[in-house]
Picture (cartoon, rainbow, N blue to C red):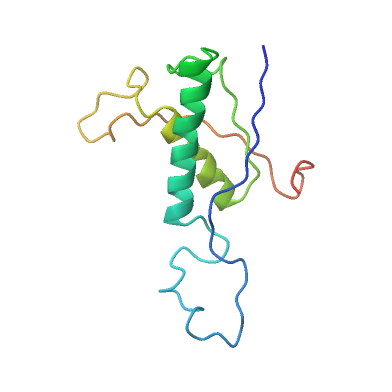
Length: 128
């Protein structure tokens, strides 16, 4: 069975600034830079990942929470905000799993490094 889910990046900083707005154009206002995912955007995708896991794992039983490269393929376009959104989403999806997590003293609890695939943004025909 194949299922595709598509989503946009989370909340981000502006991609361009109003030149005369000296208050909101500084690095202190947008510390990640223009067009980057904000903390709110990270939180949005973490919560979305948890919601998707609840639906597709717990409610419908379509996926397993133990990651397998045969089960899941994640693709993102090649922008920091979309890649970060995908990683946040996966962190939320796999939040309660430890099967794949290394048992290393300083490793973040329940964090599984799941690959996110991409191609150069200038060759990506899906990019809108």
